[in-house]
Image (cartoon, rainbow over all chains, first blue to last red; front, side, top):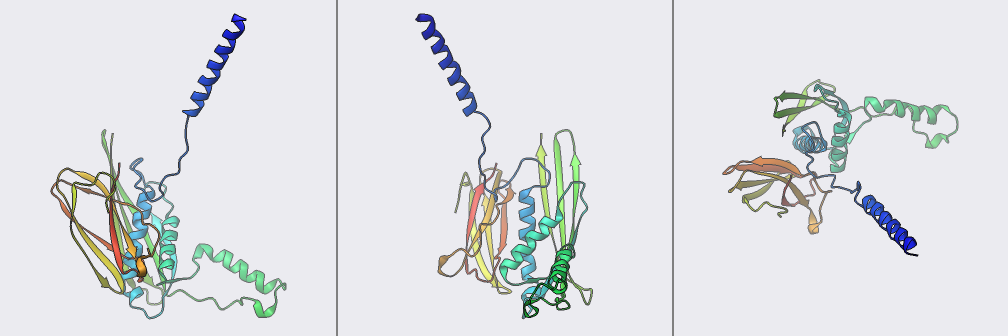
Length: 196
Length: 91
């Protein structure tokens, strides 16, 4: 009897130890998407948010946008990544485009990267013969953009044994498609320093 | 509005004006006691006190002791008529 109770006690102890270990293991928690992120000195979510917000607000104040009677039509062109890191510049311009659309002050035309799906859809509606003629979106009626947005992001990285200093500069331009003139330009500088 | 450990930061001036149809706000903050890493954001209020946009991202700023810095914010839409300034510390 005594042996049995001893083994039962031991197994209960072992089981509870295993359970406790499982409870104190890795946890998952939702964080704040807008919080400042300081994991390392590389390009991060806070940099993306700062850049997109600064560029959007500045663009809304430009004469081309605020001084125009109707919302001007803009398209997104390329933002070159001139840094040594992998940065998805498309995400930055998409963020800017979303914020500008939400302001209601700008209208956007499909960009070069989205043209394929636009032409596919038009082809489908016009050439497949499946759609009622009065409801088709006809080819030849697309609106051209008056302006395009393009820019670049560059960085200067300096490293010593103890310090890594990264400086980003993001440049954005609004170009008049017809006249080729630069209607607005702005830049955003960010510096991040990591000490070991 | 303050969150976290930002008592050493004084807000010495707050002003705003309508520029190009959009509300522009300017806040001057002064760091009195120690070098501090704070983050700020603006909250834009429209008619009836309703917020006109989603929460902004927190923007970090480093202020040395005794330094006074001017922070400018531009509203995201012309509907904003008022603003709130939020300060938070970041690690």
